[in-house]
Image 1 (cartoon, rainbow, N blue to C red):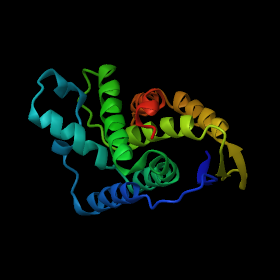
Image 2 (tube, rainbow, N blue to C red):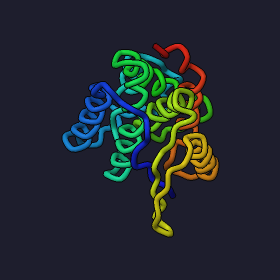
Image 3 (cartoon, rainbow, N blue to C red):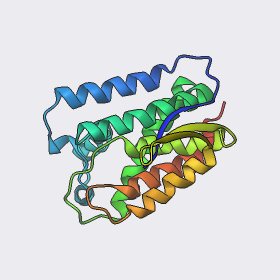
Length: 197
């Protein structure tokens, strides 16, 4: 396992949207009781309605555990600041939300019969990572490897390859919506040009 600590992208503007999204996610985790009505259930696409639209959106701001939340918020902070710097506040918000929605749809397309609730901002953050890969391909990220404990600056492309490899290793793991991660990443990667300023 490897943990990103920071990058070497120069930033001039304060990442308002990144911080606001983080605050919303953290507040909802501590203030809301678990409610499946706010979570996306893939099988519910068979009977679409306003509730489905609502849960597809709200599920992006919910997390199952403190570790789930902490990991996602760390990745959002590291990659979100650079992308928001690149495309601005409005573009970043649009990319984040659209990536999250596409990630949910992509996951659902392969799990149409599943009644297991899906939640988390991973799909949206993966979309931000996809765009980050295009915008900052030649930059570097400082990562920490816990076992054995050491840190190193590595190229963004190396980090992304390691991350993608980890996704495929966990493709059949229960409790992890890996296809949402991959779907969101693909969306951000392919659509990054539409948000470039």
